[in-house]
Image (cartoon, rainbow, N blue to C red):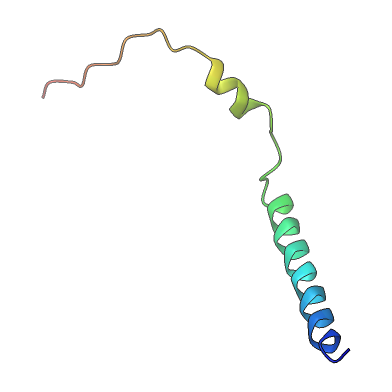
Length: 55
């Protein structure tokens, strides 16, 4: 029973920490566009690589 006095506040602190990190990710724009990175992988770049300028 005495271990609950330690484990419950630790678990509450962990939940609050996880919620804080999640809120910061939401506010920072982490989840704004979830489809574009997946589509970018499928886009084929057929153009030849650009040559560096001589100079």
